[in-house]
Amino acid sequence: MRLDKWLWAARFYKTRALAVDEINLGRVRVGGQPVKPARDVKVGDVLNIRTGQLTREVSVLGLSNQRGPAPQAQALYAETPASITAREAAAEARRLAPEPAATIEQGRPTKQDRRRLADWDRWSASLDEDDPG
Image 1: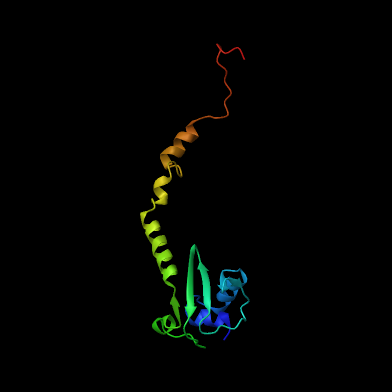
Image 2 (image 1 turned 30 degrees about the vertical axis):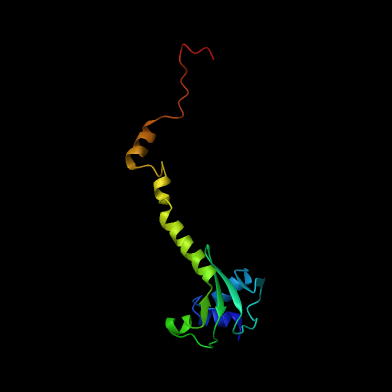
């Protein structure tokens, strides 16, 4: 069975075209090696699938030519224990990370700030009489 078809049937990607694109970008590996979309997948293969910042390592348990419901798709693979712990650790780190919006000290100016900026005449080059230069 083709790798791109299996990824689509196992519901890792919404379409086969998306699966092909991700495989061609090197985000899917079989046994740690980059592969092509037409590579045959066999029961027992170990796949590394990177989606976003998350990398999942799954072993193939079954093959299916058609995309079925989610419980049926989840029966096609098993995630390795190391991958599960790494995924949970990443989720915990995201949960404990500070809110990105809280780090912004000065963002887009408000209407009042824009009015203050418009009042300030930045192009005037008036010199003080006391300043000799």
